[in-house]
Image (cartoon, rainbow, N blue to C red; front, side, top):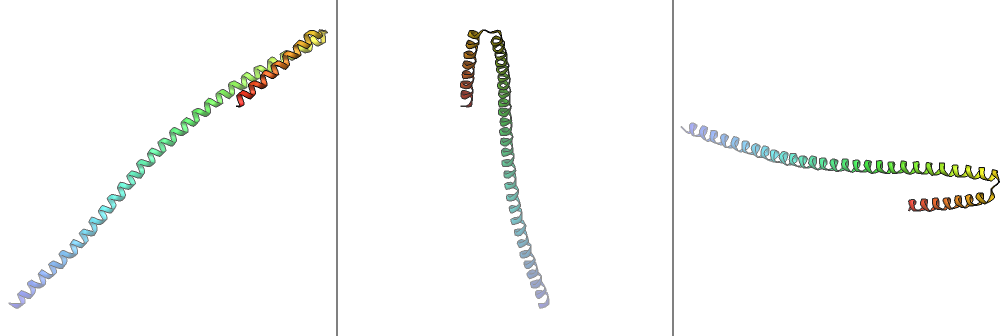
Length: 131
């Protein structure tokens, strides 16, 4: 009979040890699960933050491109206007040369003063555009 008691005690003791080992492993699994969930949540937050930052950077790049395109367009317009002014000045210079050759010194003097005035105006315009 004592053999049955020893077997029962050994069985109960073995069951208790197995139960304790199982509980320890379940606790480790739960701890790893919580850790993994936390890591997953932090990765989601990092991903959302990165997407927001990328969207902001894309908007900033598009705004910079639009601003650059506007500056380019205004620069092209200014270059066209300057080309037209140069052509007008060349035409005035050619007319002045012809008047000089024709021997009309009074008109030549007036044209020279007009050219000087146009040059002064052009310098003032250039100074205002630079500032």
